[in-house]
Length: 115
Image 1: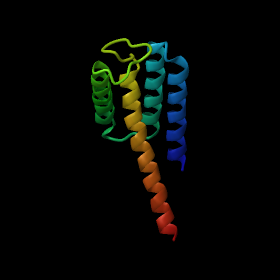
Image 2: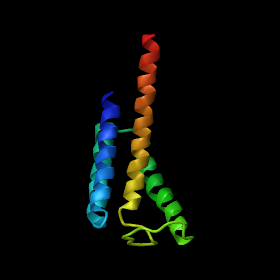
Image 3: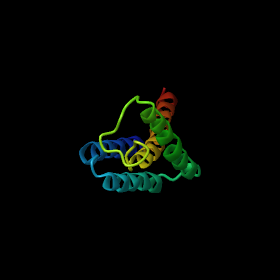
């Protein structure tokens, strides 16, 4: 339950940070990086480096392609039509999705073992 609460808290903080400060790309990127560091530091996994790198590369690449093709635009793009914080945001999102799915699996296993 603790892992689930932590992941949800960091997710909420990152969404609020992005929504409120989206015009300040460098500040959002820094705060999202802090959230990623906290998530990693409190519950490190051996594959986290690869997870963060994959999120930082593939998420923004897909979004840059969509922006380039006109699917949507960002209000404050910094490069390739995307904001500076987006690679960090994707890296954090993938990390937190991994943590959330792990926490849910743990809760399901606990519930099954109690039955």
